Length: 214
Picture 1 (cartoon, rainbow, N blue to C red):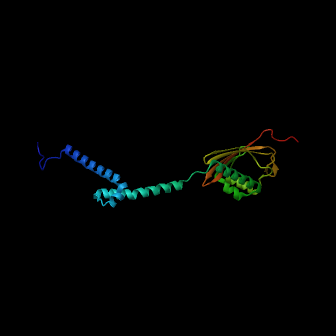
Picture 2: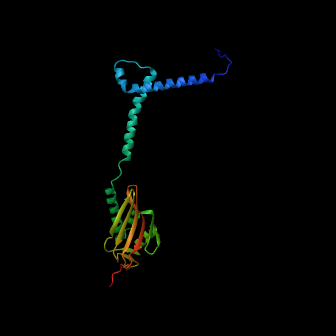
Picture 3: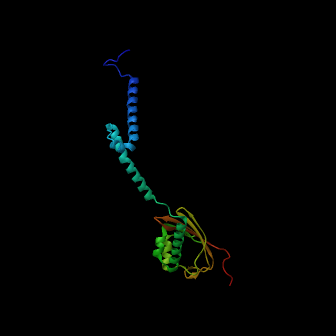
């Protein structure tokens, strides 16, 4: 066997063997510590003195387990269960009822809370209106609503997005003091933000041949 001299280069095979041995010892220490952690109180009660490296791992295990448990409970509590579909639909119908009453009363403050800032309306004549347009004309009386409440045709929820289809009777919409005789059908899109429904978009269509004969 040839021995390495003082000035000889290191043997790669010996270096790899030594590194593997050190890594194996470290892994065994961790495994021993984790296995010993659940039984640490009983061992201490019997007066058994563990090596320092095992005592250290055991102590870390005692601290980490309760902290991890508390963290999981806190995260679960913050998430909370989502509202039931029936509850969301009830809230949506209530919000749409607030919209209808605010239009009849000309209550622009209530409408400002209900309309999203990016609200868009497509009228039955194809006009594109925003939130400011609607609040201005309702507040000035150019646009008025009267008569019977709209009839729901369909309400559909898609998570925190909802689509409402409804129909109004003829004469319920008043433009520049003149009642519109046609029935209208509406598609309204709501989005739930910060726990409340906001109106995002409205599309209006006139029902053809819906004017009653004199």
